[in-house]
Length: 523
Image 1 (spheres, rainbow, N blue to C red):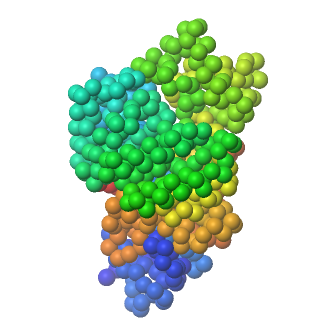
Image 2 (cartoon, helix red, strand yellow; image 1 turned 180 degrees about the horizontal axis):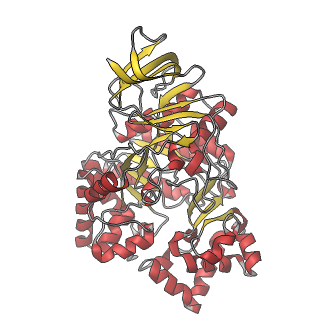
Image 3 (cartoon, rainbow, N blue to C red; image 1 turned 90 degrees about the horizontal axis):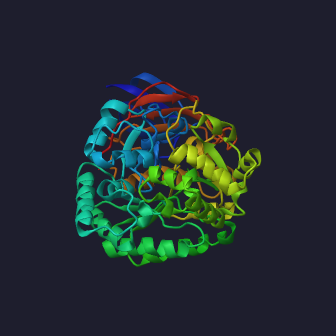
């Protein structure tokens, strides 16, 4: 047999957490045809043979928590992900998915998630569109968001669902899971997810459990009230029978720093009781989300358009400002504007809200609100709120896997987004594994390949073994580094020699080849 590709003399880290070994593999028709230890067998031939001496060969990284489905319509080559070794993106997190949708509430969903074609209604139609029209460079699988389901059923109503609305949401969830959605997610700091009570989420999670899907949650609180929010998430899993994924586990605000010992223990205790509980994490001390998240949730009743109208009313505006100051006072210097589409706000990108307020000659809350008034939900922020001690402690927990919580962008993205979109995985390998020595290389790779593959039920990805798809990363463990920074985020990472997606060379020495060989993976 003449293979398509042979990689020999590599240090193989196969994604299972087993010890690394010297060896190589051969690829045929997009899959790993054979794998060996030691010297390459004699008489093997291939269209291309690559000597990987000094390099580590691993499975391509699986980004268990990202939001590429919000942006890859404009960036189908997903450079920000490919150039850090991510060969599979997992979207639909934080309750935010672009399907299902109903035409009557399409504009509400658009204002919530952002611009996209919305040339679909069902979840299956959405996946079909991604497969046929987007054709991203990496593989894509996706959860179905509670926010999208609730918008389709009842808009941005801040109340309990009626029996009919509940039945509608359950039906949409079941259909989405049947059509290939990988899991059910919630985002409980955002409207309309924040309007749902525990009973609603439990009932919906029962549908997910019955379909064999897990429940992933951006909890209701990750700062001062995390010890209310985390037990709620655990109860939802326990009472529904669903497996639980705590999204981007962290503790925000100085008052909570160091208490990850307690949150991790709560998860450990739940696991000991039989709750199938897991978590993911991005390796940074800053978070990122909508800049409008600094506004109170009650102001979102009726959607983003209604929010903008409330901002224009002097009495309501004053109440919004008071609530913003109560929530963010003393922290405005930690909240930076990552992107804003309004032309007059571009000069503020990369600056803290305190700096922006000085430039505007306004109080911080007023300056922030004016940006939301002009940009709606389309402005983003980078928020410095965590400490390294908690980041490292959470990262080392055996039930925690690596995710970026980032987006698919190009190197020409016109803002200063969080560098996690470009560098999360090399940051774990370079800084936390090599420099900080938190765990062996085999464990670091396992947390971003074999473990998320197992979580998602993949049987043919995430491990280097015969018959699996050839999603491959070839990197130098001595030099791999997250070059993207907060001030200069839109750049590739050092130390990544090659990235293959389904056997196709997609990046070489920090440059994208233009290949778009990704597959849509349906559950």
